[in-house]
Amino acid sequence: DAKTTQPPSMDCAEGRAANLPCNHSTISGNEYVYWYRQIHSQGPQYIIHGLKNNETNEMASLIITEDRKSSTLILPHATLRDTAVYYCIVRVAGGSQGNLIFGKGTKLSVKP
Amino acid sequence: DGGITQSPKYLFRKEGQNVTLSCEQNLNHDAMYWYRQDPGQGLRLIYYSQIVNDFQKGDIAEGYSVSREKKESFPLTVTSAQKNPTAFYLCASSRNFYNEQFFGPGTRLTVL
Image (cartoon, rainbow over all chains, first blue to last red):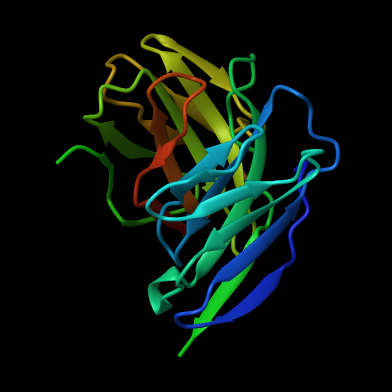
């Protein structure tokens, strides 16, 4: 079973920031938070990952709460091409289980 | 261009036939994975390989087989023993078992 909880769907206006929440209340100290997205009928695309500190790259920012029980993926200026299903995944990096466990994710619809 | 290729994009087979899905990567990644996705669902791990000539069963390996004779290639055979083979199949690779995974475009298999 996925260790994360995400809302099934969200809407966002084009040009506005999209804030996608994820709860991972049972996360362990050595588990990272990963975000992927999947545009319809394509393979998932890696976005970002983090352990404790906030992270930013050219695609998005990841904000992890101090207790690490939840996180938020931020797309600062959403475009229509950001419409996709977004998956939040917790995973041990360095353990015996390197595979990703995908839940159902959040379907983000960016509207004009 | 470096990346992961899967062929073909669409595949049709008659019930009772074995079929092999191709996955090739030129990223020099050690680890490769096969996932299955059903409509409206997340991804489920079929098999993974951490290194050449080694592979492990994932969560839903029954009815599938793989080989890893070359670092670049990780073909998946869907056998007639797989009860519900119609699905979207995704191949992924990562630098090693602990790094972020990069996905191919997927193969949509339909068994008639």
